[in-house]
Every structure is written in structure tokens, then in C-alpha cells.
Length: 314
Image (tube, rainbow, N blue to C red):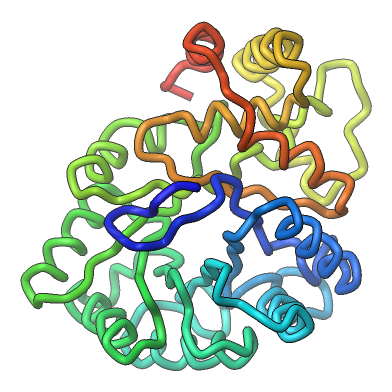
């Protein structure tokens, strides 16, 4: 288990992404994935109020609703860390205090819980003063509706400013940063954002940890693209740099007898300040490969090979 920042949240280093629930995974499949994940020792589930409003026929909140039904069927939630987010839904955009209060209440209803363990600002909202946003999140913590709050998709200067605003008001600041980070997408986090997290003792929670499926090894030059909702997004990594990263992953995979996806996730969770990597699965079968990552111990030689193949500029 990994500790998130200075909180008392101990989480499995593989966080289960709930963005596919109600989208590419129907409800029965989603329930089976949740059962398989927790059955393997996983305890960290990530969702958002906006998941999955982009799918035809959906309006948002489908993922939270499915997780809520699963929690009721399971009969307990205190051994889990449930994370959700506010501010990115097309129906409830932004981080105004009123919107934060309303979306938190809606998420609590859909999840069927009395508190959210880790509540994220899904993306920065320059139109709302940071002091107002952190005050609204602070009130959720004081009222017990959120145990801790966190940020997602913030720049380094804005993240630092939000933390300063919370300190000035004597409020609980963000405990973690969720950011787009993986072996072939490093430049966004490594550098200023990583430095802020290290200095302020925030944990990095990496999303798109498998680069839309590219880091499963299924995407190669000369092969037909897999049948997937994300195939076109993953295919953008079919560059010289992406191929070099896959080549290094293949070598490390051969050393350990582990799936490519597990190696990619293990590299990510070995990085400084990273507490967990978020990955989703459309089926319980896909989840099996991912679940090998937490127990995979990469050597210094493995890490150096992967670092060299996928430089920080990517």
C-alpha cells in the first residue's frame, strides 16, 4: 500500500479507473471488474461526476451510479478509498462554491455514501478566484462530506497558488495531484509540477497511465489497429519515440515474464512522488494483466533502460 501525501489514506498502487463504467463496460461487466479488483486486494477507485456523459444516451453520473449500486450490493465501503471529481461536467462546469456544493451532494447521492475519501477539482477554473474554490472544498472537509481534497489538471503555478490560498485561510489544502503521466507522456509532469508535489508533499496520481492502451503493446507498426473506442487516440504514439519505448518494454517484459502493461505501470509507480497509477479495464480478463503490476519489482537496470528509451521531452 502507498500513503497519499500527509493523509491517512493508504491505497493500492493500481487505482481502478471508473471512466469505462456505463460506457465501454456495461453494468454487469463493471460489477464483475469491481469484484475482481477488490478480490485481488485493490482498494482505490476513481470516478467523476462527468463519467461518462460523452457516450451516446448518457448524461453523466453513470459511473458513480454503477459504483454506488456495487457498494450497496457489497455491503461495506470503509475498506475502500473512493475518489471522485467536480468541475468538468458540461452540466455543472467550473469550481464556484455553489457548483462545488451542488456537485458534491449529487455525487454522494449517486455513490450512496456519506463521504468522499478524495474529492478532486477536475480541472482548474481561472474564472473563479482560487480563494473561493479552496474555501468551498475546505467547507466540505469541515462538514465531513469529503475526507481530503485534491487537484487535477492544474499547472504548476496555479497549483502552488491554490496551496498558498488554502494556507492563508487555515484550510486543508490539496493532498494530491492527478495528472496525465505515463512512459510516453512525461514532459507535462516531470519538471515544475513534480517539483511542486515534492516540495509540498503532494502525491501524484497518474491518469492515462497506459497511454490510451498504447502501453499494452497491442499497437505496433504494420498491425491493424485493435477494435477499441480509444484506438485512434492510442495510435498517435506510433512514432519513433513510441516504438523505442515499446522495444524497451519488450526487453523488460522478457526479463520478468510479465505483461507489457504491467511493466509500464510498474515503471510509473516507481517514479518519485507517484502514489498510484490509474488504469481501467473493459473486462475482468483485461484486469488480470494490470493486477500483476503492484507486485512487479523492476531493477535499477530496468528503470534506466526504460528512462533512456522514453526521454522526458515526450
